[in-house]
Length: 251
View 1 (tube, one colour):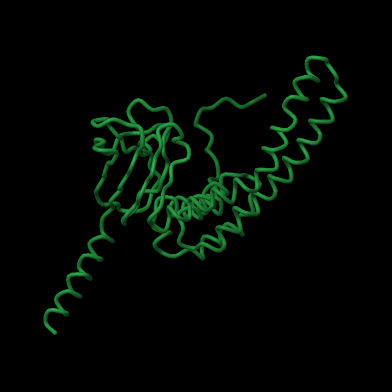
View 2 (cartoon, rainbow, N blue to C red; view 1 turned 90 degrees about the vertical axis):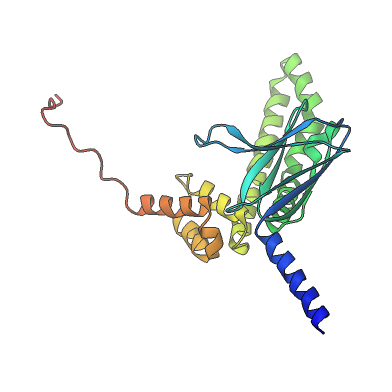
C-alpha cells in the first residue's frame, strides 16, 4: 500500500511540475547537426522580433525548456531557412514537426491554445478557399484580357471577385466573432476582440459582452488587459487638449 501511495504521489508531483513549465520538443527533416534554432517573440516596440532562446539541432531533434508567465505567440527561426514557424508558447508539452522544404506546413500540437490555433486556422482557410479558388481558376483569363485590353472581361472578373470577396469577408467576420463567443479561455478569442476594438465600426457592446464572458486567466493576459484598457478609453474618451495660454485667435 505504501508503495502504491508513493507511486501515485510521484505521478501527481510530475504532473504538477509539467504544468508549471514548457517543453518544446521539435523534430526537423533535412537539417544537419549543429544548426541553430532561434525562439523569438515580439520586441518591446511591437514592431519587430527579439531572440528569447536558442537550441542546436542534434539528430534531427531540438528542445526548448522554460517557464511561461502566460500564453503568447512566438516563432521559430531556423538557421539558413526562409520563413518562420508560429506557435503559442505556454506551459505544457508542445510538439513541433518541421520539414525544411515546406516550413509553412509545420505541425504544432500538444497544448490547448496550440490545438485551438491550428484548428481555427484550418477553419478560416476553409472559408477563404472559395476566394483562392476563383483567383487560381481565373488568373490566366485575367492576364489574357489585360494583354488584349478587353475591358468587358476585366470588369466582369473584377465584379465577380468583389462579390466573392464580400461573401468571404462576412463569413470570416462571423467565424471570428462566433469563435470568441464560444471559447472563453482561448488566447485566440482575446486577440480577436483586441483586433475588433481597433475597428472604428466595431460593435463595442458586443465586444464588451464577449470580454466579460472570458475566464479570469484570459483576462489577465496581455491581450486581455489591453482589451480592458481599450474599453475604458472608448467609454471615457479624452476631452481634448486645452488651448495654450497666449495662443493667437484664429481669424
